[in-house]
Image (cartoon, rainbow, N blue to C red; front, side, top):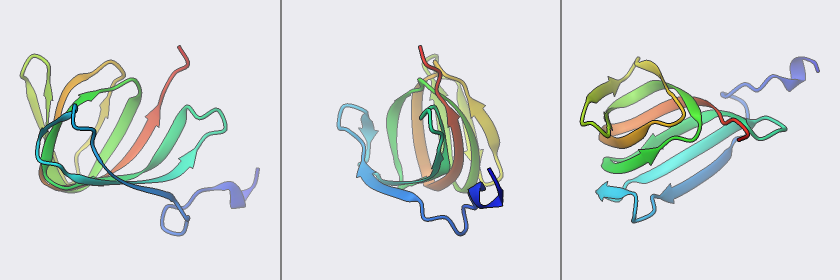
Length: 120
């Protein structure tokens, strides 16, 4: 490995995916979403990139642990017990594997993600 193996998000050609959520996950809206995956490990358990979404609300069920840093906008994350956390530009947090609830984009949101999924 050398310096050429370092992935620089600002110059890397990411794998870009544009999509809408499956209807069974949507609670409100039909937000267009984009993922720019800049790196996936050879074992395909570790991924990093950026994500953005229009306004909307949907069910989430995390099988991976994910570090997030919000770059723009705001969202409300709600657990299955109804407790909420509002995240906005500058928020940094980890969602652990096993978390279930909802993610609501209140203002078009963009985040950096770093996720790890264990082999179970």
